[in-house]
Image (cartoon, rainbow, N blue to C red; front, side):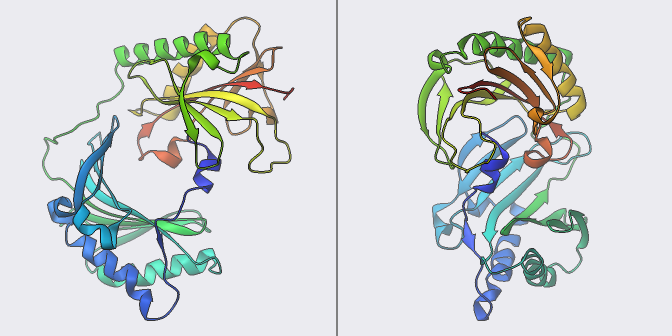
Amino acid sequence: MKTLALVLALGAALLLPEPGRAAEKLRDFTQRVLVHAPQNFAALRGAERSRASYQIEYGRAASVASWCDACKIFNEFAWPHHAENWYLSDDWHAPKSWSHARTASYALKQVTPLLTGFARATSGTHDYPTYRWTNAAKREWVVVDTFNGGFTLKVGHDLAGSSPAHTLHALSLDDAQTMRNAVGNVLKLAVGGAADNFATLRGPGKRNALGTMEYKLAVDFGPALYDCSVSDNTENVLKLGDFSPNWSLDCSTTPAYTSVSALEDQVKQAVTDALPSSFTSTTGKLVGLNDFRWDNDQNVAVTVGSLSGMFLPEGLAEIRVGITHFVQNP
């Protein structure tokens, strides 16, 4: 399940070297990857790992395991104002003694000398900037996206031409109706199954990155929804001061080319149409990171929100719908 807690718990793919001769590692790595950009990283690419509405993910080839073990390669589709592209992504983690500024400075000093003819732009925040270098003539780009404890390196190549192999079209009226129907079906089953902690909706389970049990759904709600799961959140693994033990069922709408606000309006309408009259709108701090919340008198809450900006490319949106049964009063 995609949550802020899970973002904070992401494991390291590669460790940054300590200062010294080994500090050339990032520069060498970037240069080694960059030469494969014009061929869309074909020599580095392994088997297909997963598909989404807007991209295909590949693992790395066995032949590059010694230096690119945790690399991922993506074929990202075209949509308006966004070219179809291929890129390689790898996470780098800094020594614990390094500050945010030192980590960002390290990346800049390592990568910048390689990128003659590239224009650099900076976005993000003061503490966690994102640097992007672009060479329009070569249709190549490099991104360093910093986070707490390191950064993600991406090396990419945009495809030429006006007829991309894969295109993500705008959300159609039929697609929107299918999505609303799917959200309504989730609400009808999940609200009714909340009292027994969604027992009849749970499939196989395993512990996630936080150490809590997460279960696949035993019910398929169709292609309009994805990343659906039931989570056992009865143990305070993060030692939160305001923790409320609960079970939750969460689903996301399939990423689409539309605005977050437009998509969220449709999801909100589908939720309000499907909710029993016993639910009332909740405001204030209990809404948390979500945008909307409804509660009933049986300790069940329904939430709607979006973290599209954290997980999706610019221009795409998805909405997260959650149904939570609190073991104790929230």
